[in-house]
Image (cartoon, rainbow, N blue to C red; front, top):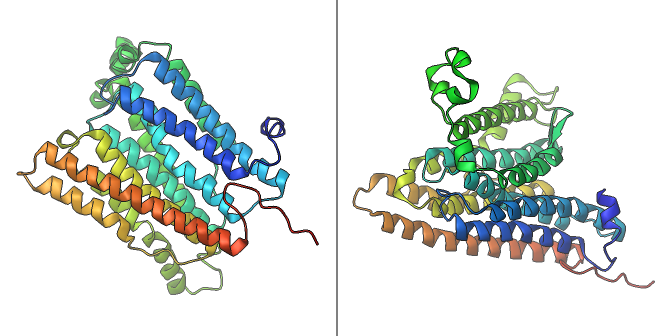
Length: 362
């Protein structure tokens, strides 16, 4: 299917342009949702949810086409991997915004749960590739990133056709009926459907993270058979230590009371911080560079989180201002780092970023 579509692309279109066009779909969905559901506490119009469904599926389709275009044009490079995975990690915010808008979980810890588990899981995928040189892309042999992305699009499309507030606000006891409700724990019985689904997502994410840790710490590249027990343990601890900064970002997200700030400001600030350190993990993995345990780019967000949590004199407007400033700072920091990285890769490989460089005639 993707090969069929890619064959319609002109050979002069650079693969990174295909990736960027796909990423712009996520930007469109995110921007429209920002206007109609700025803090995910109201459900957007049906057509907005339908637009998000289209953007999700279009983004992933183009995301799969860029690699095929690079092979068609003979322009595969590490820069393509950075663009592909780099856009993936920022586009998780668009997927998160889509789901959060129709389950209406803004202003609650449920939203923080969704964002932290999603972005931490994505970071762990890059972390696993960093140590094993294998990027995990599926759970078992059935459910992979293709099924998940297209399912997210189809789910959004289905949600555009129903009364979302009435559907997701039902309690589990009302859904299963009185005859079965008595067999459920009181906690589960009183959960609204939206909270039940998010609980399931959280449990599934934790299981996948544990499996990822298991694959890494027992991988031959980390726990080499020739190592002594202490050498093996040292390497395993070193691998796990790389998760310290993203875990700290998750803790920082939960430190901030959801009612003390606008959800969007918190989401964007934490999302950009996560995206920046994830991009670093991607690049350092490709370049076989050491990834520091402490990523200083996370410190401003963590300090802000502690400040907002502990300073009773800080008003909601003041907290929003702090996070707003950090949004601009992280945007500048990420764009500057990306620009420097792209320039260095292009100079090193003698390639162009958005155009296909003509080969020199011998």
